[in-house]
Image (cartoon, rainbow, N blue to C red; front, top):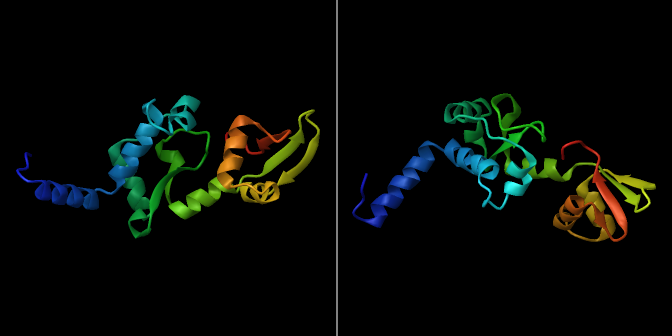
Length: 157
């Protein structure tokens, strides 16, 4: 549908997004898994996580989980090392999804692999090291920090 002025096009896009809010999650999750140029591709597609949902399935999940009542709904995989597929996806509030990502137990070892302690969460480890959660995330990806080995104690995390 060609638009002669930008205002009408913006209004059309706004209405379309309001009437099909699940499409935002659909396209972004698909992009994370299938587009190497996407900033999050390394955390999804490169790790072998596939996007196996159809538009109809994500729409069904949207209504099943009542995402329309949420302030900021995000698509979440129940099993973190699993694919985006119907029986492994749900919608959560963004704050809850973020909390889940930072509440993983983290084990701390010396470089000689001698166990030191387990933190209950990423936030607890960040407080102990006096760094941000983002820094702990980088250290977990790298595996080492400040002469220690850090590992998430949940498989696939």
